[in-house]
Amino acid sequence: MSTKTTFKRIALVAVAALGLGVLSVAPSSAAVSSYALTVDANDTITVSESATAVLTQSYFASAATDTAAVTAIIRSGSSATGGIKLAVTDSATSASSTAGAAPTRFTDSGANPLTGILIGGATATKVQASGTAAGVVATNKYTVVLTNVAVAGTYYVDFYSTDGTGLATPTSSLTTWTVTVKAASAADSTSTSYIHAGSSPAVAADSATVTAEKTAGTVAGNIKTTLLTLGAATSASALESLTATITGAGTLGAHATLSSAIATGRSLLVKDNNYVVIFADGTTGTGTVTITGSTSGIVYKTATVSFYSSTPSTVTATVKKAYIAAGLTTIKVVNVVVKDATGTVVQNATVSLNPATAGTGETTTSCAYSSTSVANVCSITGSSAVKFGKVSYVAKVVGADTAETEIKSAAFDVTFADIVATSVVISAPSSGSVGDKVTVTLTAKEKNGYPVADSTYEGGSANGSVGGIFWNTTTVPAYSSASFNPFAAGETITTTSGVATVDLYLPAVAGNITGTWTLAGTAGTTTGAIDKTIAGSTATITIAVANPGTEAATAAAEEATAAANDATDAALSAAEAAEAATAMAQEAVDAVAELSSQVTALISALRAQITSLTNLVIKIQKKVKA
Image (cartoon, rainbow, N blue to C red; front, top):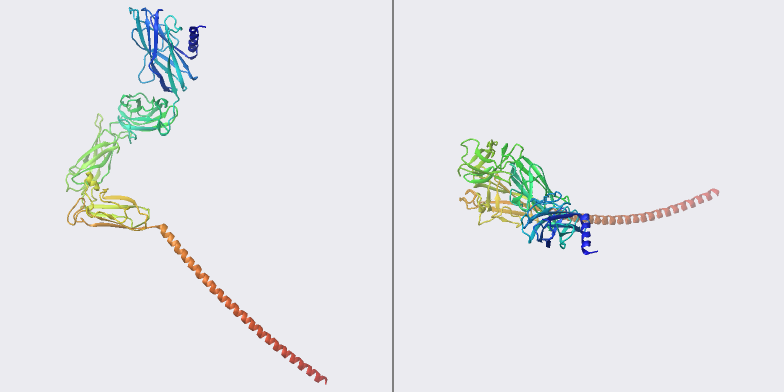
């Protein structure tokens, strides 16, 4: 059997078993020669992805009606199946036309459609333009796509050329395209996924809130998911794809370049490390975005996005600083939250503060939306450094809608106060145990009886705050314990309604600890935040620190000593009692002995008397007989 016959049979069997793509470039003749086929590069993909290459064919056409074709055969080291798509993408010497069974057009699944001809058992040709001269080298380029690969492995796609008169007869040697298909790796919990508000790229932290106006196409934010395994990056070709979905309001787009994403749909298949961009779809409310591993099912991200209407419906003003500096600008005094009819925060309204009653406060205000505070944050500037007291305001809101809807808040009060204290008191618990957490409190009031204005003092004054220093720079605060030093020199002290607090832990050694603060300046001179009436005076705290463990051990030892002493006393008492008992026993023995002697003597005397009496009776008997 000839080599040519063997090759024919191999090709035909492969075509029947594995799938065949045939694309011919015409016109028909039999004088085609000098075939050459090249593939631009081998490829590596993940299961369910597609591989794409560019195949270049050249041949010598001796006549104007010569035909050439390209045949593709899939062979693989695994039992997996795939499909081949062939599309003419460029022809240097040919004009387009088709012949044979109707070809099927195909489109790649990516963002950029590939237009071409899918060969599925049909023959398609590109016919050289009429009048094209003979004796030329024709060059054609084809897009080749390997699709629908379900199993990992190495796939080989063989290409060969044939002439138009006998498509089953190879007229060139095989050119092989190698595609390595890797299994999709299931990334783990070390993977990262971050959401960022607006059109800036996501950074390694989530934005606190992601909100946008509801107009369709408005970008609310973006999510970037980076898949990792055991904390390490894995080759992108080995990672699973991601499924991005949104429920509720909004729609999604995805692209490797953030600015290139367009609103596409509510469920997308996304490559690892691409951006998922969240767009408004014209509706208000909340949208929930979920990023899930297409293979693993791992949920890498769930995030909430809000879409608002430009028409304001409600407004709420919250005072953050109730006492502000007269004649100066105080920032972050009031937070104004504007919401639409669905309760979603409105970001694009114009907000201003105005005195509730005309003439009660000639002040200026400024408000700007803060995504961190999720509110319009307003500052207030006092009209005069000597004008103190309470002023009522209302927040006025003008919507960005066509009607410029206007609403107002309920009235609220702020009080203009001085930033110079006429009274500074520092207090702390009088006692505590080692290691206890205690709160030390500083309370400062000004000349009008108000708390000093809410600001930062002492060290804060060096950072541009309106409040000055509290402590004397020559006689700095002194502490008996180095680890217990509240309100130290140069420390930023922030007051709210005249009160500042600091939490510290008592030292581990029992005993009294003290803190002494000398106020700034000297008597009669106002210095920093300290009025001349209290300048140079001192504030002191003393805390008695106990050690319950040591004291309990000492008490236990004392109790043990007392018990031992009591035991000794009891033992001595017992010994004395024993001695007394012994003496008493001896006395009893002696008494018994003496009594025994006395009884013996009495018995002997009694015997003598009985004997004497007996003798007397005998004598009497004798006399009577006589």
